[in-house]
Amino acid sequence: MKVVTSQEMKRLDELTIKTIGIPSIVLMENAGIKVVEVIEKEYSPLPEKSVYILCGPGSNGGDGMVVARHLFNRRVRVKVFLLAKKNRIKGDAATNLSIAEKLGIEVKEINSAQDLKLLRQELPHADMIVDALLGTGSTLPLRGLMREAVGLINQCRSYTMAVDLPTGLHADTGEVPGDPAIIKRWPKFPL
Image (tube, rainbow, N blue to C red):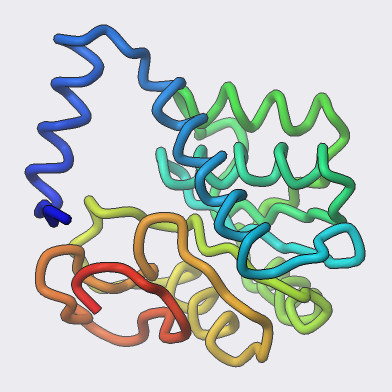
C-alpha cells in the first residue's frame, strides 16, 4: 500500500475534483461511509450503542456529519458536538450540517467554557467517540477549546476512532506539535 503525505493527499483531492470531475461533496460522502463501515466491522452491534461525534469547522467536521447521518439512519443513538458556531461552517461541511439537522440529529455547539462543562458531563456516556475535529491539514499546536476538548476525549474510557488521524497529531511526522493529541487507537500512518 502506498502512503502519501498530507500535501500529496491535498493534491490528489484537487486532481480528483478538478481534473476527473468528482465533486468534493462526493469525496466527503465516501469518506464518511468508509468510516461507518469500519465502525460496523469493529464495533457491532451498533443499534444499542451511543456514538458521540466531535466535529471541527472544516472538511473533517463535514466528514463527521456524514458519519452521524449514516449511523443515525442505522438507528444508532448519535450526538454531534460542533467545536464552532454553526453559522461559520462553509461549503460541503455546511451542507452536511444542514442535512443532519433536518433529519433531527442533535448538534450542540461547543463555543465557551460553559459548553465545555456540558461536553465534560456528556462524554462519559458515549459508548464510542468519533474524532472529526481536525484533519490532515492541521499542523499547529492545539489551543483553546480545541485543546480542552481533546483533553476531555483523552480522559474518557470510550472507544475512540479518528476520521483521518487523531486530532493534534501531525499527518506527516507523527509528532504532536504541542500537547495534547488524542492518544487512543488508530490504525493509520504514521503510527
